[in-house]
Image (cartoon, rainbow, N blue to C red; front, side):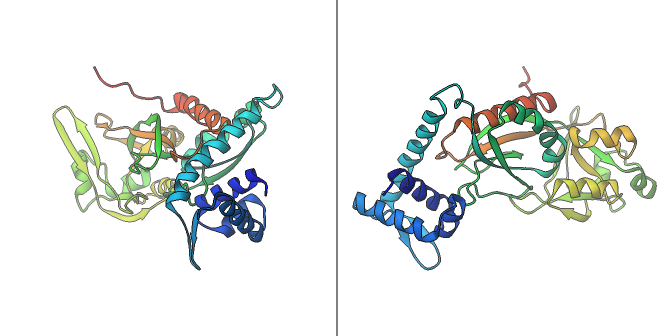
Length: 307
């Protein structure tokens, strides 16, 4: 038995919750993965996994062993990449998940520069606004807007997206120009709803002007759970939008979107990079996170707290 292969197979089974999925990600047969786990358990003389016909659960001993295995595999990965100047360049496959507008407008256009710096890193990028099970789907990290509620994740605050309120000219021609945010609660106006993945519901937007403060929920005829679809609905005149500057700038300059309530202040949307606490921060993940920080400093720098 190759102990490294066995530990790697065990870690992947824990992360995916499946022998089949683990075998697929390791490019091995399910039989090979099963044999490696059995040999590892025989060597350790403990049961690491409880197997049923439907799922695989880690035992208490297995959970403790997994924590050490992950650190050990990470240390081995770092050791290999530091042996020589030629191999010190971060390398390997990195699985990430990012919001669709962020991927289209910011991340993907900047990737040639990233790959010029780190040509040996291969990115498997999921593009969505859904909640990702990082352990179950074997994802290394996610980039997300809004507060990270999952206490099981380590989240690094990397930027703050400034928001504005916008409408398409065709919408304003049909429904008129609202003069106050409270007008959006009237039956005359409607918004495009955004279904946040964490609860599947639109959320109210807080807006402030001097001593006035309102929470706008609004009425909608359409609600979506994808940022690109949300923008497209607003451009089509389906309702009023709350958009980060990076999504609105091009359309505002072309006249496709008209800014509303420009004197009012909206809370910025924090951006985070999140990863599991038991996932070793390898060299490739570390440089990717640092690059995201650089990218956000250009497009959505962190807001300093008011004095």
